[in-house]
Amino acid sequence: MKTIATAQITTDVPAEAFFERWADMATWPQWNTDTAWVRLDGPFRTGATGQLKPKGGPATRFVVTSLVPGREFTDVSLLLGARLTFQHLVSVDAAGRTTVAVTVTIAGPLAFFWTAVLGKGIATGLGADLTRLEAAARAAGVPA
Image (cartoon, rainbow, N blue to C red; front, side, top):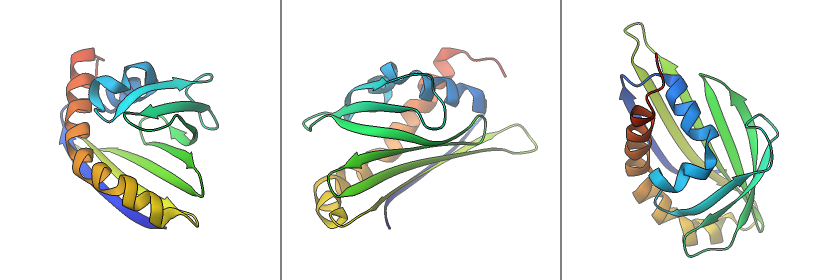
């Protein structure tokens, strides 16, 4: 497994607000500029499946491999010969500030290919996407 990118943000926006934005996958293109659309096949939960279309790329199946509200959301895109994993870990400190840390990894026999194709774009855009996600979560007005 190879790490492609990491990003982290600490904010006063409550953890629940981030989970509300992640659950509303149809709105992902509003804060994730590389995504054309996302569709979830059922409820937002561990084991849920869906499809997403990156801008300029083919539609890709994904699986929510872990969902622990308030703590973790991990999804895995099923690429030809590789699995692209986005792990979102959320923690809240004693002062009530929320930290969201995102790690993107890739594994599989064609990971080298997908890293060459997608890696730089993911690495350059991840921090900005996280900042836009924070703004979307704040704008949604989910109460603390």
